[in-house]
Length: 466
Image (tube, rainbow, N blue to C red; front, side, top):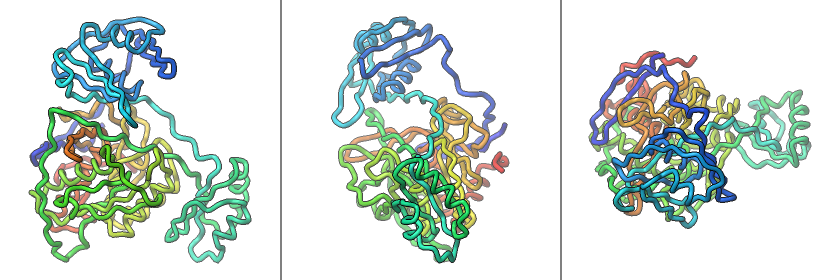
């Protein structure tokens, strides 16, 4: 099956080609196992012949640690043991290599593996993804949408059902209702099925926050030298709505390109100790815009926080974030997030946005599978997966037939004097939306032509989506 592809190098050089995605990413042999009993500090392993990177990817995925390796370090792993402590297990697995585990305050521990010195362990290792089942609906919640012009008040309906209103999308007549338990929610769903004022009743699903960026050494973020240019007035200004976590304050030179953050989950004070995912995505988008415009641009970013201080959000809040972005001028959407849960409510919301000529870019997912990730898999949404440094699909990235394009899967960004690596299809999505906006800006085109310009530049094959 042929896919449309793009590869974008750091210093503004763009190389374009097509790749055939015909093979699944490598799977672990059945005999090879690595089990980390974190609560007991015990490890079991049965590994016949892994290379060092494969081992460390699995260690990172199993433990949640940030793992760093000294470049050009090789080691073949063959080990079988049960019930070893963490230190004993690492010694058995790593042989003569040096290692150190460094606990962090309010963050995952770091594992450094090296031949010469810890300072030389600068290569960040990507955690191997663990396949996950679609999240189940939140059992005691429903999303209720009233018909346009309905005279029924949601307050009266909620009172009758014994529910609390915990979320509102007034312009969409959509409301998030919370019940005492799952049985009460199911009873309400049956009762609403025959209500003539109710347009739809949908489930609400949890959505996990994207991973944070990782501090790296030995690599520098590209210098951003953006200069604002006025819009020519023939179109609405190009604004990328970024549906993500909270955005942090950036340098004054970049702040003019990032509008004040909006939130659908209440007021949030951004953290200062580490870079948030949204801040990393914003800088990645700006890098992509700079590459396509030469640095003179009228494009701005409108961040919308749908997570707050939580590790999860919901499909209702993601939909609310998208609508909030559009209502505040966004005419291109970047959704560097996703889950395996198919929400009809979110699909309908994005379908309405897409029908307005607003391109939507969403992450395909960081698991080497072919199962759909949402919202990327919805019709009208551009699903973006990740390439590795050679331009091939990354071994951790989704390669399902819903995918529309591929873009670089890693970005180096800076925050508070430190460089960070952000990796995955989230990054690819940021590159894609930035490229589309940059192309439209350079051509003096309106936002509704951004995706067509991107497709034209790639000479893409037809999408596999219906």
